[in-house]
Image (tube, rainbow, N blue to C red; front, side, top):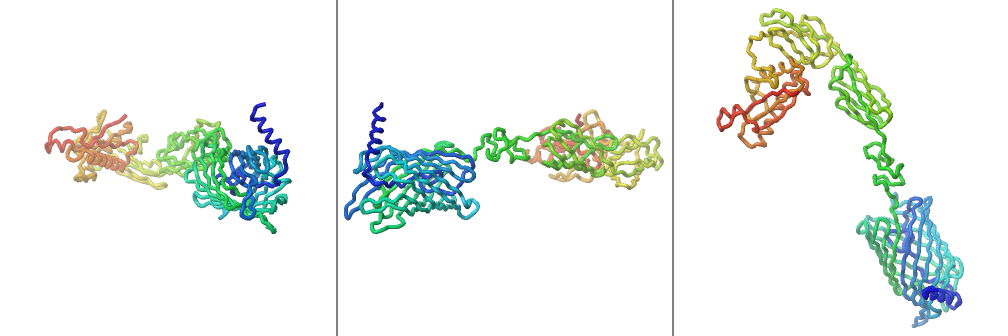
Length: 597
């Protein structure tokens, strides 16, 4: 047997062998079971079901029981060194708790130095009013005090006691204020000239969390007998200051010191305590997806946070489909706008072979396009349909077009044909042709004549007629199509230091538009803007881009598909001529048209 164990057994056996001290528990301090910002005063907060905490404190109290007789004071309990073990568990909105005091050492003039067990306490607390939804929180707490003390000093009761308390608290920013008021039923005990009987007690305190991981607290505890009698025991009061520091995500250090106010039994001259608490996160998030485990349907899988059912904490299945809307000839509809509404909403600028990633579900799909009736359909998308091609026809809105071609003398041009937005050619003999309603690029051509291109609008259900005057190829043209560019013999003129096209260049740009429309095999034309080197380079780059954009806008007004035109501004970085002369500056201020494959 080790010396330490032998000493403990001797102390405990000595305590059991003596019964000279009064059987009353004057160790009034018990650590709070669940409060996170005060050491003694409980709050009303309720943890989620299944949440458990544990606390272990060591504390020392000096002279907790002094007896005043006239002008003298008799010490009944001199020193108490105590280990407090406490735990709490939340279940169905209630907090169950237990406190086990272990006296490591007690000294008293009336008994030998002793060690042993104190009075075990069982605790039950339930919230009545939620302080997060009301001005104050309210709770009720009950406690059963078991007569388990094994020391002979006045640190244990002779039979079972109880407590009933009302708890009120409120949060003021970072400061939490709580008050506990209640009554304690204890076995009646008379010693010398005092009577220890049922008591009224008060605990009130405030905790201030000045950071997320640390804080300070101040508390006042007091108690008095309900019935004072001829020889009152007096009011025991104690002022306690403390603080806490989070050492990790689940371990908290707590400590404090107190001073007794007066000399009534149960009032120490001083108390010092320190301990560790195991307080895991009440709402853990194991997969770190922002959804706490209590609300997470998939606590071990990370939510994909894509705006779809992100509340459930589960990654959501997705599938891809190809949505393609076609005209009556089976060709993709140009310029179509599609909206998919259902479990999520998608707005698509074009559904021509568009690959869409969707969550499974039922969607209402709608589409509009120039020259077509609006389309609407309900689509059911499942995860097993990955890569599915959804092809749907749109009903075209139709109109009619009649075209004639004459020469400069007003005579009909033989073998003349016209195309509408790149369609197959039709003869220009005034025959009515069905075309989709909307804006079209009309190109009229004939052998030996220069082609003519115009932008033409055909109304739904209406007829449109157009007569073109073709000129012979002997008429000089300022525009030529080569293998890699469109060459122009004149400059495109703009207003000084602006991107405004001068009217004198409209005819030239009309010829450029005609050349592009007459060659549908050209997929795209790059419009380049260039300036001279006069002025800041950043200004020149901006001006050249604006001028290239202005030319692109003009050509689009002539019926050219925007996808066939790209504008780029190079500023003065690509000069044609070097030198600081007017001729060089004029040559370098230009617009060029390059063909892209």
